[in-house]
Length: 73
Image 1: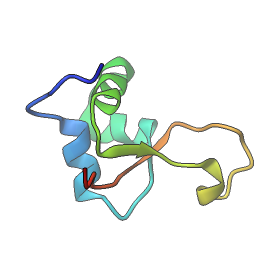
Image 2 (image 1 turned 90 degrees about the horizontal axis):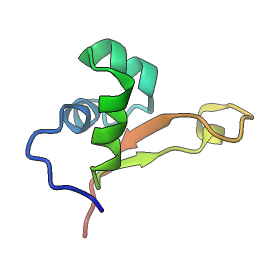
Image 3 (image 1 turned 120 degrees about the vertical axis):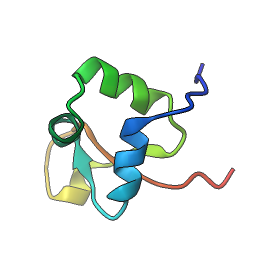
């Protein structure tokens, strides 16, 4: 179940950097939030999408990298 959050600092930060793919660690450094809060905001946003590691040149199976994409629905 996704909650409707009025202010989402993670979504706002990713919207400002919508052309970039950012890791959770980068978001943490810039917003000065803890990991638990960041994942809460990410899970409760319809506009933040996880990115495949292949898009950033990594061969790993999973990375915590995200990008802002406007949800049209």
